[in-house]
Amino acid sequence: MTRLTPVIAPELQPAIQPTLPDAQTVTSVTHWTDSLFSFRVTRPNSLRFRSGEFVMLGLMKEDGRPLLRAYSIASPAWDDELEFYSIKVQDGPLTSRLQHIRPGDQIILRPKPVGTLVHDALIPGKRLWFFATGTGIAPFASLLREPETWEKYDEVILTHTCRDPEDLAYGRQLVDGLPGDPLIGELVGGKLRYYPTTTRGQSARMGRITDLLRSGKVFEDLGVPEIDPETDRAMVCGSIGLNTDLKEILEGFGLREGANSDPAEYVVEKAFVG
Ligand SMILES: Cc1cc2nc3c(=O)[nH]c(=O)nc-3n(C[C@H](O)[C@H](O)[C@H](O)COP(=O)(O)OP(=O)(O)OC[C@H]3O[C@@H](n4cnc5c(N)ncnc54)[C@H](O)[C@@H]3O)c2cc1C
Ligand SMILES: NC(=O)c1ccc[n+]([C@@H]2O[C@H](COP(=O)([O-])OP(=O)(O)OC[C@H]3O[C@@H](n4cnc5c(N)ncnc54)[C@H](OP(=O)(O)O)[C@@H]3O)[C@@H](O)[C@H]2O)c1
Image 1 (cartoon, rainbow, N blue to C red):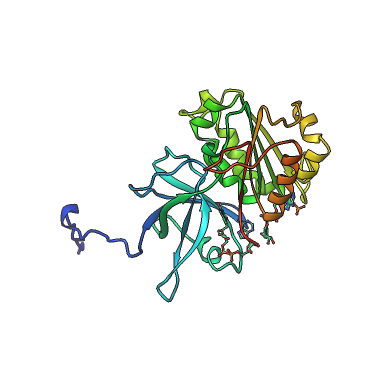
Image 2 (cartoon, helix red, strand yellow):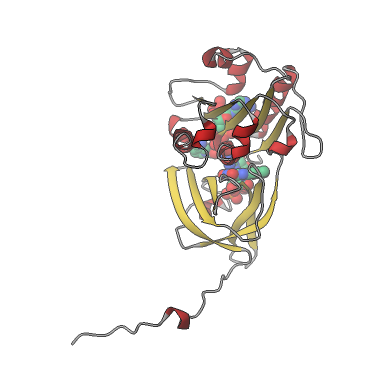
């Protein structure tokens, strides 16, 4: 005998209520390495942000309180969804759990974006440098897909330094996809220069970006003039050590640090604390 499964008309089905405050639903997850993954979530209708900003996101703890961490939004301001690029810290309170999210799961996302890696914090220039290490590429993944980046600058140079070559995969796929992007491919034209380096695993270009800048190798490799405060602008996102060292280097070239309230030639933001 065939069993009939009752079919309930969609309009009669109970609405699924979010169980978390500020809940958003995961739409896709990509694992890049054992320690890096990216994911996309639904975007709250109320969320307006500037490409390059970060928000607080997380999961509910067992005691019913939210566990939140700062995350750069890796998608551009015009995207219907939000993308994030994350480390997996094996004993990290949040990412030991967040790394297991799957499409359909819910996360908490506080819709209050902030940050200094925004076009508003820089005065006009001709050439824009994005200096990223590790997951510090996330805000630049947003800004690289932001039309304003390409409208404002003649040339954009993305440097991305990671320990191992496989850690570069997310950034490389993004860069490879830009020229064919239906929305901004034409704007990007031939303006993007990509300069990936690794410090531990062997790759075509080795070394910390700080050493490569101090020695002048970056300029030699790219065939570009040294950084000049008249023409060059920079955004930096990495560990506290990287940020401190790069600030010194950029100020050595004559660039001044800017802020939302006082734009100048370069801006910096932490990719993580610790
Ligand atoms: C402004 C800002 C933006 C951030 N944006 C991102 C982002 O886009 N993607 C992201 O993965 N993280 C980002 N972080 C770090 C993030 O807030 C958390 O620290 C991270 O999710 C780990 O959380 P956790 O609770 O598992 O471990 P935590 O207790 O927060 O961190 C444990 C330790 O892991 C290391 N660590 C933490 N985060 C990273 C990282 N991203 N890269 C390398 N080592 C790390 C540090 O040594 C830290 O002390 C950002 C932090 C700040 C301040
Ligand atoms: N990314 C991974 O594959 C991985 C894997 C397992 C665990 N983890 C854990 O995640 C944490 C952070 O790892 P991470 O590699 O993402 O971030 P990270 O330690 O900040 O290193 C990212 C890149 O930045 C470089 N760097 C660090 N400080 C610098 C400075 N002052 N100036 C110039 N360059 C600098 C590093 O070079 P150096 O190599 O020379 O330091 C590395 O190439 C660590 O606790 C690590 O144990 C990471």
